[in-house]
Length: 433
Image 1 (tube, rainbow, N blue to C red):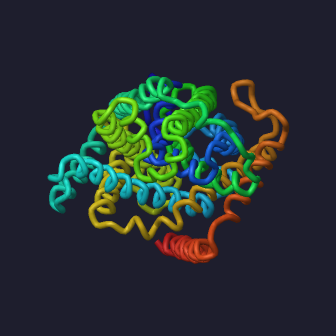
Image 2 (cartoon, rainbow, N blue to C red; image 1 turned 60 degrees about the horizontal axis):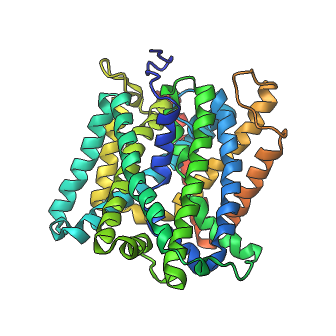
Image 3 (tube, helix red, strand yellow; image 1 turned 135 degrees about the vertical axis):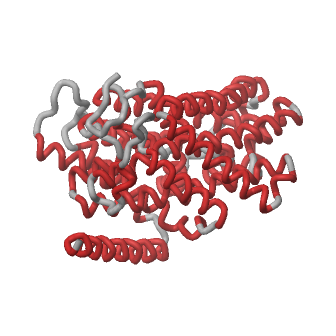
């Protein structure tokens, strides 16, 4: 067993990292996504999936290259900080972590809402708070005990959430009407682009899962392979789910905006199908939370170790378990408070733009690292085609950012300005200390 200079144990292999990426990407969104896409493009939805698959592949190729070079914990934060310095590292860690925490709060509430739809007992306030505590405390405890324990949970939940989706796809083919799949019109580029903006975020999550890079075996090989496996696997799964949903429900698919997969399951399996997929959605949300609490504390840990965050306890490693236990406990505690007290809705405006800026920073870091280091070693992954892929990735992300609403751009600009002020005041405070 090999330890890194961070005193973390490298115990995660290709399939473990792939499971972590898939577990985050396939969250609650896939259970509502088919109706949203159908409402926008109807039977032409395949164009959006293929287009979006191309876009996310370009971005993830950048993650694969820089991830094969920078192999410490922190993922996207570390890639950006090592390329552009502590200021951009500070912005990244705050935007990255706050976006993840707001999403976790929303997912935890959605999970309890699903449970409440089956068992009304979960609708009472004190029970909701108790469930939040059990969720975050339990997942935090498992991850404090070790990366191996955390990965066992992630792999188990990933497999558990995939089984009902794969069974639904398999058994739905007998109920598919191919007349429902006939593409009778070609959408415009603007129509595909509008839906692709939604789909793009359905693929996000890999950037979070890569935060455990410091505990990955042979990261320069494992990280690119895990990215390819997860992106291709999720893309194929999404296309198959969209196809069977459209084939079974036809034109009515777009009317089931809240639970289209449950309606497909009800058509295929009867009333029990609706319940199975509903429970599957709850498991999927739990899986998303398990991977988030496994991964995101490593960002806090690495930022503290780099002195980018002035919170030195976050860089402590447990003597027995070799995990960043203070960072894990801190992240789980904040997640519990956000879920219990609310407030994540107000963060929704900055969440999508935050992830896009993280993607932009990683794409630019590929260009920067090439200019600094020149040739890569034989063990490092290099995107073919020179600078074409990172440049295309930058263009795509800027285009997606241009689709944000004016109020979102203004609000996000103010937020960045506040963070910049905090950063420079922080530096002055440190110097006085």
